[in-house]
Image 1 (cartoon, helix red, strand yellow):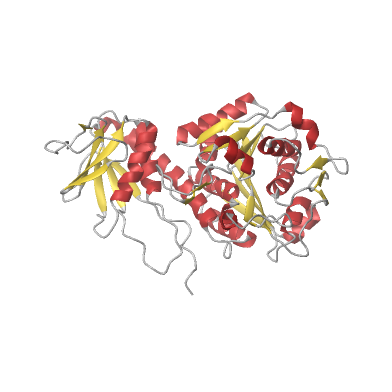
Image 2 (cartoon, one colour):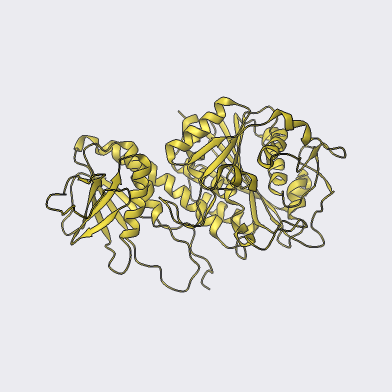
Length: 476
C-alpha cells in the first residue's frame, strides 16, 4: 500500500565542484549588481538585467543569475532562485554554474544552501512532482581552490540535508505523525548512520521513571507519548540538545482557537531540528559527544486530559502547578532537562522549541530568540546562526520576574505572569540546574507562509543548522 505522505527524507539537488564545463550542458553566468557579468558572459545583452540577487533570466541555452552585492544572503537567495527557475516541463537535468574568481568557501556554502533548499517541496498528492534540475556543477576558475570549495560545498549540503529533514518531519500531517511515528522514524534514520544510536522509551517507562510532565501532556490522547534519546560519540565535550516533540497541539482543556490550529502539526519543529542535527553531526563524524533528547506527546482534549489547577511531578521530583494546558511545551521540556542534568553530565544543554506566541510578537517571523544566563553561550549561539544563515537575537532573563515562577501550591508555576517568552524561559531555567544552558524559542521562524530566499512555505527547518554549527565549534 502506498504511503499517504512523501518519502522521508526529501531528495535534494546534488552539487559538485569542478574546474571544467561540460558539453551540451546549460551554463549559468553570474551577474552582480550593475549588472557586471562573470565568466561566460561575453555577448549577453545586459539591457534588461539588473544583477539583483535572485534575478534568473534565460538567454537561449544560457542563463544569467543575479547575485546582488555578493553578500552571503544574496548568494543564498540566488541559489534558491536558480533552482526554482530550472524547474518545469523543460527543466534540464543538470547545469554548469560559472563561478567568479573571487569565490571563496563562504560564498560556496551560501550558494549551495540556497540551491539545495530552494527547490524543496512537500506535498501530499496523487500527482507526479513537477520536474526540477537534478544536479548542478559549480565551475571554479582556479584549480588551486577546488579542494577548499569542494569541502565547503559538502558541508553546506550536509547542513541543507539537516534543514530539509527537519522540514519533512514538521510538515508531515498529524494523522500520520504521532509520537510513535516520530520516534520510530528518527530511530530508523539513525540506524543507517555509523556511530549514532537511538533508544525509544514508551509510556510505561515514562511512568516508571516519573516523567510526569510528558505523561500529563500526553494523557488526553489515545496515541501515547514517547521519549527519544539519540547518542553520538564517546569523547570530547558533551553537548545535549533537547527538542520539543509535540506532534499535535490542540491546547488541551485550554483549547486553541480554530484559526491556525491546523499549523500545530509543526509544533514539534524543535524536536525535528534536534533529530536532524544529530544525524548531521554523526554523518560528519565530528570529534564530540552529542545527545539528543526529544520528549514526544500529543496534546489532546478528552476525559483523561490534564487540567488547569493540576499539580504535576516532573522527573527528579520538582512539582509544577498547571495554569494553562496550552503551555504544554515547557512541561515536557522540564522532564527532559531534568533527565539530562541528572544522568548525562553535559558540558552544555540547549533546548529548542516553538514555545511562545510572545516571541513572534517580539522578534517577528524570521528571527529566533536566545535565552541564557551565560554571555558566552548566548554569543556562541548567535555566531553559529550567523555562520549558517539563521538569525538569532538574545533576550533577557529578567530578574524582576524570577519570583513569579514560584507557586503557592507547588514548587513552580507553569505560566507565571509577565512577558510570556521571558517567563517561559525562567521556568525552564529551574530545570537546567547549574549546567551551562541556552533556550531557543523558534515559534516565529519555524514556519513560513511565503517563499523567501531559501525558505519555502510551510515548515522551515529553522534551528537545525545552528545546532550542527554549534557542535562543530565545540569539536574544534
